[in-house]
Image 1 (cartoon, one colour):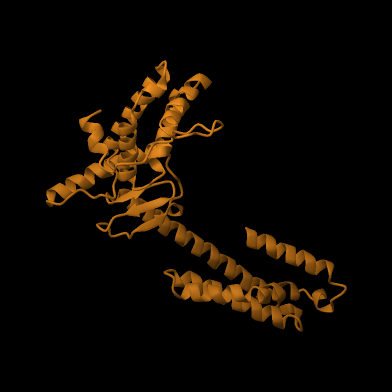
Image 2: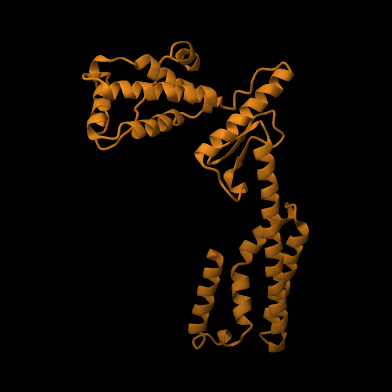
Length: 288
C-alpha cells in the first residue's frame, strides 16, 4: 500500500510539471520514469526471487517488468507501443498477486504445523520450538493469519506440554524444558492470590512476611516460561483483579515497602522479589 501511494504521488507530481519538462507530455513517460526510479528495488527483488520457492510467479513479475520498461521507452517515439507497457504492467501485477497468494498459503500451512507440533510453544510474538522439533527454533507470529488470546495460548500450550511429556516418558527421556508446565504456573498463581487476600485483609500488612513464597512464585513462573517478565505480568494481573479499592492497593504497597520494595504510587504492579533460586515451583507444591 505504501508503494502504491508513493507511485501515485510521483505520477501526480509528474503531471503538474508536464509543461516544464517536455518529456512528461509523452504518455510513455508515466510508465518509464517510475519503472526506472524503482529499478534498484527491482534488482534486489530479482536476487530475492532467485532464491525463492515460487520461481514461476517470480518469472511473471520479471517478464512483466521488462516488457513494461522496454515498451515504455520505445513508446516515447512510437506512442502505439504504449499498449505493450500496459500489458507488461498487467503481467507484473498478476505475478505479484499470485506470489502473495502463494506465500499466504505457505504461511497458513506452516502455522498449522507449528500449532500441531507438541515441541513448539506459541506466544503473542511467535513460536519457540525445541531442538526436538523439525520446524526450527523460532518463527514469527506473522505466519498465522489469526492470533490467539493469552488464555487460549495457555490452554493450547498446556495440552502440548502434556503430550510432549508423554512422548518423552515413552522414550525414557526427561521432559522438554522449553515447554511450560502450566499446572505449576497455575499453582503459583493460586498461592499469589491467597497471599494478596491475606495482605489486603490484614490490619497491619507490614507485620506479615510472605517473601519466601513470593520469591518462589517469581522463580517458578519465570523458570517455566524462561521469561523474566512473565511472572510480574501474571502477578500484576491477579493483583489488579483482587485489590480494587485505593485502601486495598495501599495495604499491598505498605507490605512491599516494609520489605524494602518501594512502589510508584501512580502504578499498580506486583513488584515480586527475585532472590534465592532454590525457592521455586517445588517449594510452592511442598509448602503452599
